Length: 241
Image 1: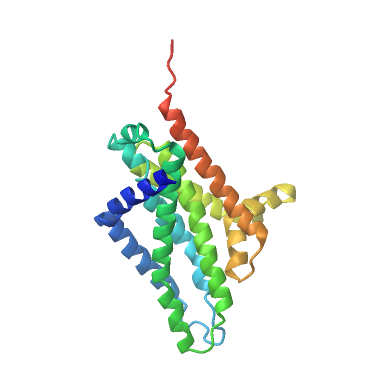
Image 2: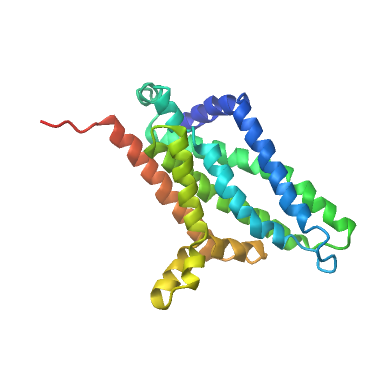
């Protein structure tokens, strides 16, 4: 675990001092605030944050790829990845450290949006159960998007390619249920099961189902495992005789 902590501290310092990362965080918070206050007075008789949570996945599908685009692709472009792989830090520790760092940073950024929810009780009584469920869903969904972003970064040679690939994967995974609406039979059921938005909406309503948690953990496991395998394959380039 020392290797995970090493990667965490190393990249945390880099992200904290990054002007681009600071701009991304500010822009994300401003857009999240805009999403919230657009529907603030829409229906004061029903106090909940469902409109806010229902639109948040789209912003997460943009912010998380931007957060992870330089994790591995940036190292590769700066030609520091090969040096990093020669250290005692293994590929698993590199990926795990980056995942913990990005998820921790995302959780902290989401924490700043709690003051939005804190303004709702000014209009009446707010049921905090669905709010807690909604934020839990945001963290779970963000963890999935981060794992896909790290995978995309491991497959890319530059940050822009990583950003576009990760956004594509996150966007498709989130809105698979829209395709399922136009499908029938078992195919529609499969697409609905694989759609992140279907699982996210359950938790956002305050309904915690073990199947939704297993879904998020499974996506993260396979994406991060693929990223580790990609890094390992880079250590042993194929030679053609």
